[in-house]
Image (cartoon, rainbow, N blue to C red; front, side, top):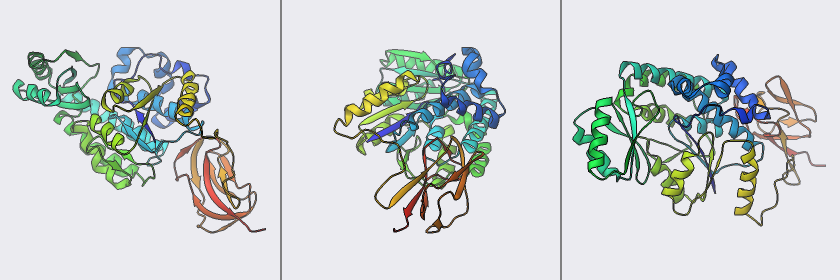
Length: 392
C-alpha cells in the first residue's frame, strides 16, 4: 500500500515553482491565485527566502506547490491507500482525498495563515529542532527551562521540535545540550506554532472550518493530533482546531501507517524532509519524494519496481463488460447535476460541469454513483461517474 505525504511550513524555498512553470499542472497555481486574491505565481517564481518566511506567504506557497505536484501525480493514475500531512500538509491531504475542494482548501489555508500570523504578532515566538535526544528528555528540557516553551513536533526518532518564547526556546535548547542533544537548530519560522501561543487563532479557524464543511472520504487521513485514521468529515472541525496549539505527532502518524500495512511512502511537494523522517521511523519503509517534473518518471519506475508483475496503467473508460466510467474532459472544479442514482443516462447527456466544460456521457446506461464530489478539483481524464450499461 502507498501513502501520500504532504510537507508543512518550513519546506518552502526560493524559486520552487520554476521547474513547473511550463507544466500543465501550473494551472493549479493560477486557479489558487484567483481564489486567494494573491499573486502566488510570483511568490513561487521570484520571492526570496525572507519574503517566503512570512507565515502568510510560506503557507500558501507550500500548500499550492504541493497541490501542483499532487495534480501531476494524479494525471499518472497513481493513487494512495492513506494520506497524511505534516501540520499545514494536512490541508493538502484533505484536498487530495476529496474532503475539501480547491476553493474551500485555498480559502481555509489563507485564513489559517493570516490567523497564525496575527497570533505570532500578539505572542512573538520561535522554534528550534532538537537532534539526537530522546523524546522524554526533550520534554524534560522544556520543563526545566521554567519558561514558555513546549514540544511542538515529534518528527522522528531523535528529532523533536520545540517552540515558545525566544527566551524559553533558548533556555530549553541549552538544557537539551546538557542532557546529550547532538544539535539544536533554529528554524526559519515567524511564530511558536503548535503551542498555546496559537490559541488566539483557534476561534477564527473554527469558523472557517465550519464554512468549509469537510466531507466524508474513502481514503483515510492520519491525523497529526491523535495519529489515527479519519474518514468522517465532521471529525476535522475539532482536529484542525486542536492541531494549532497541540504537538504534531508525525512520528506516531508514520508508525500508524506502517502498522496499517503501508510499505511505500511518497512525499509530494517542496523539500523532501518527510522522506527522511519516514526512513528513520519505519524500518521497512520504501520512500520517494517528488518536487519537480523530472522526478515524476522516477516515481513511475519506483511504483513499477514494487509491483513488477502488475500490468501497466491503461487510461480509458472500460471497467467490466457492463460497466463504464465517464471521465472529465478537462481539469477544473467539478459540479454535478442533480441526477438520482439508477437514473437512465443517454449518450451525450450532460451530467455535470468541470469549470466551464460540460461533462457528457459517452455511453447509454444507468448512473450508479458520482465518483467525484461536488466542488472537488479534478484532472483531465479523471473518472467522474460510474454507469452500468443498458443490456443489448
